[in-house]
Image (tube, rainbow, N blue to C red; front, side, top):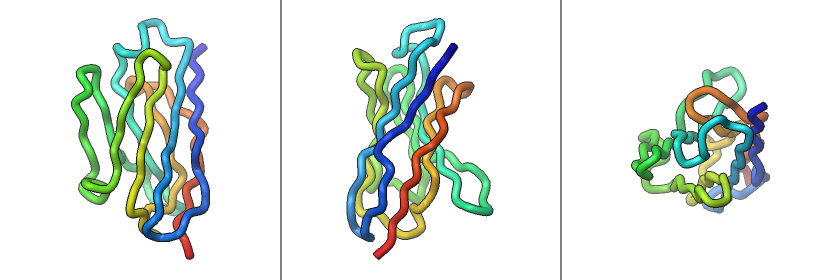
Amino acid sequence: QVQVAESGGDLVQPGGSLRLSCTASGMELRFSAYEMAWYRQAPGKQRELVAQIRRASNTKYAESVKGRFTISRDNAKNMVYLQMDSLKPEDTSVYYCNVGGIWWGQGTQVTVSS
């Protein structure tokens, strides 16, 4: 059974930083074979792609977070990270980790407010 777990969400002031972490286990292939992604969903809105990292560490970002967020992975630890800098109130959402376009975590709440 595949298990995906996010951590690191918190309340932070505008302009602050947070690092989200995601670990995954139980997949058939080794972790490095999977494309990993972070999504977010704010109340009343659709879930949207925030950042994606492929097997060769190619990355893709939503326009709204380019230059502020950085996705990275540590295949030896089965971990993917989202470094979020210069946070804005509109970044407030539940952030979800996705494995291979298939499996989801339960989400972690990020609130940006003064």
